[in-house]
Image 1 (tube, each protein chain N blue to C red):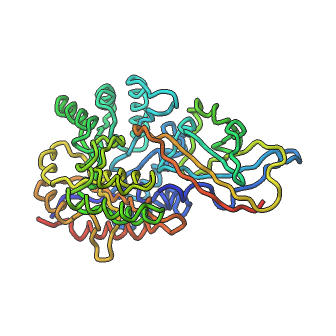
Image 2: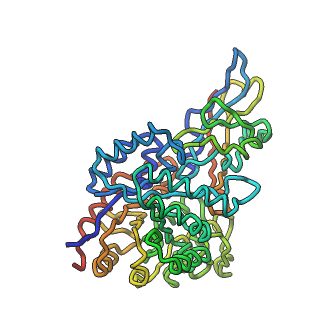
Image 3: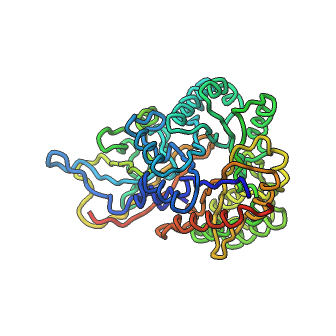
Amino acid sequence: MSQIKTSVSMYSLQDSYARHRLDLEGVLQFVKDVGAQGVELISDQMITGTPFPSDATVTRWRDALDRSGLAPVCNDIFINSTIYKNRELRVAEQVDLLKRELDVSKRLGFDLVRLVSNTRADVTEAALPYAEQIGMAMALEIHAGMSFQGGLTSEWIRMMRRVQSENLGIVVDFGIFCDRHPRVSTDYFRSIGVTPEVADAVERIYVENGDTMRAFASGDGFGDVSFPPELTALFRSDLDAEFAFFSTGYESTPLDVLDEYFPYIRHFHGKFYEMLEDGTEYSIDYPAILTRLNALGYDGYISSEYEGNRFTPVDQPIHDHEQVRRHQAMLAAHLNDGK
Amino acid sequence: MFDGYVFTDGSARNVVENGEVTGFQVETLITYYRGIPLSMVHDIELVVDGADVPRDELVISPDGEDWFTLAEAETVTTYRWEYGDPLYVRWLHAGGVPAGEHEVTLRLKIRVAYIPVPFGGERTRLVAV
């Protein structure tokens, strides 16, 4: 039997929450009903007043969590380093914000936080003694477009390897395992007027190079890209360049990185863009990933993280419930692959 | 990608205070997936019938009670614009807009953590006032 457990990131249900189809309790009940054992929160998204929610808000969350029986797997936090328009926060200021996020995560019942990609190594290291003191682990998200080759990510990983703390690790997002460019993204950009020849060329370059990140981006997620002349020759508007850049937010990374980084992996984001009716994900080969994770003996969680929501054309319904249901069913069906 | 959250349908109206029409107001959800301090609202533009509303005539509020000019909002770090809650965008303009149909565009940009390029969205609606 596989030791892998499944959770759902509440990120998946953001549209249902924003448009009041589900409230906080409803989201948790839905996650329970689709068969997950755990739940992942974005406290900035659904806990009002974060990072200083009222006691009543925290009690409401913890009561709903207890009633659901779901395990609190991970809280996704952010350091608002851009809180002022005229400057970026200095390291000491960012450390203070990070400590607040650790505090609120603890109050909400978590012992693991996900640090967003490009969180600074020095900020994390400075907050580590506090994290150790209150019993929180901090794991950097390895996200496509800003993954292992990115400047800030590789600096963070060097810090993690040097420090060797139980309270540091990584969260790997499956968006780094996109064998195919998500067609829902291409379709969305076509619907808002991307030049069809540009859409075709980006799809073709993705296939020819494995992904477009390695074909024309730095891996820092900062937009400093160099597009090949045969692509720029097709550009007719800023939207074309935006789409081409956006395509670098997916990577096709060999699964061997799972072996290499296994001792540091605390959690996975089971990213998905489009669950098909046949129970497969359009871009990501889940059975291959689950087979590898079972071979490695992974015994943590994989969170369903639906990101097709943002590629739904304006005013069309977002089928987040159906997509999450299919994704959890797929995970359940393949959980023992390779065992 | 977040355009669908911009400019809530049915939210455009003239503002009446003490029996006087003092302005015109719309509401919007955030072009992001989490709540932020109000200071991270990078810019807002309102266009009414093809004319840009002067930036210093716009005020915003995360609760409908306390209002800030866009310049003031740059330092407002203790008020949060919660995810799923509307931001109220008001044009301080005596008399508001005349009764009838108007073409109104709302553009919104917010800063996000660690990404130097602001996220944004825009939406144009024909509204009856």
